[in-house]
Length: 269
Image (cartoon, rainbow, N blue to C red; front, top):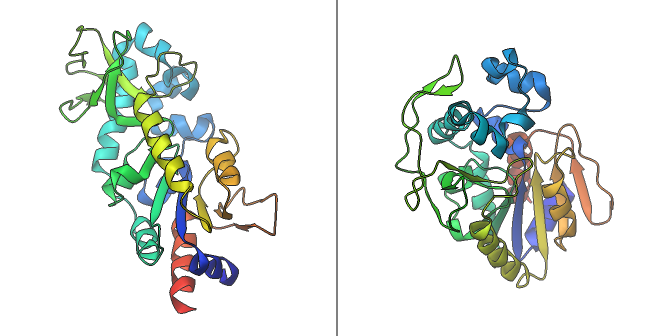
């Protein structure tokens, strides 16, 4: 912890990379394994519908109300969830860092924006549930979901209110999220975020990356953390291993606990 804190004091740029584990301390569900997923969505468990099957554009084609029952519930959940205090502690650390802070996340929940991170400093590599696109791909347009308020029958995991539709062609709308088996995702918004992040990374000469709750099952975040060119502080209670002990530290603790300890060590030294 002391070594990690010394790295942060030397940093001129702070990159936060985050996977699903970042949201656990905010009370968001853990979908790891079918048991964890079905405990949150028992109707899908009774029907033996796996996460990979419902988080799939084919689900919108076969049963749009079931697909939007799942995604509509998540949209409402993320809107109601308050980010845990760790987000604010990271922003506090970054106040003294010359090039500030940016975030790269596979989460689609919008929690970084809600916690006070500037939107231009966030890269949502798998998209955002707070934005929609045409399910038929009539154009490259992406629009805000702010006017969509899903009415969900949680017992059956079905949307009972109005389905969202594309304002351009009237077809069904879907979340602007990269799903499993997804060839129709419009990545224009994420590409612009990624390009901004790459420009910022080029400015930092002594970058430190704090990775939080990113697993190996879908290793997008872990690979980015390891390839970004800076020192890495990996916070992960289950998979803390790092490949290079000279430039990386693995902390086998939870997200909020790890951030709190880092924050304390950073300010005490």
